[in-house]
Image 1: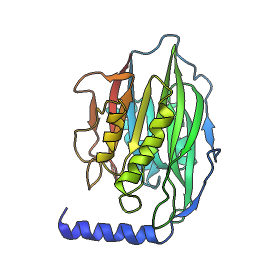
Image 2: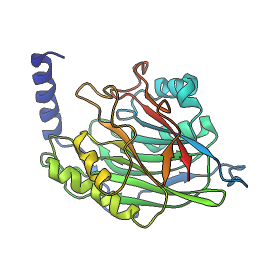
Image 3: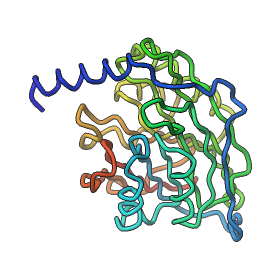
Length: 270
């Protein structure tokens, strides 16, 4: 990207965000959407490994393309847990049903530009036995929009795993310190759990240091860009380990499904 293209992009982001983003859902109680299809039960034996996928689908606008990508790419279609951002309930439900999984979804707000809900989901092969919406601190400075995280506790045999799908504020709308505060709000909730997966769109890479300082491993730190401005999509782990050095990746060809590239990771329960 040239300096001129970058400048135009930044101007566009500022103008877009200054026009009013929509209506927030300010309470932790909801709205809440979930589904647990028949036949989803905790495995009798705790699985040895899990495949994780995180994907920001850009307002859920190109859901047909996203579904095609998730269904056909070998590293994505084998997912056990999907962490989705910028989706609405209808799109989340379509993805969950295509995998035969259950899900929980909490929107942060209703976007003015799409007229649809905008938030994060956890979609999983395993039963979701508890969930929560975490309203993150610091409203957007220009539009007053809020960000949230969706938390879910998954039952996997004898193991419980706490999973978070997160979407932090943009560099236009919050400061670096405020973005760290947002991630720390998730880390505070996760402090009570032995096994934790935190993944999603950080809107910056440097904020990941806050997770590392809290004792998390950061297996997705290195790799190609996930958006035009850098590597912003990541997964952090506590109480789990990466299978090996080749057990993660970034999908570069997204078939126009999003402006983000999904990431995947294979981990060991320990």
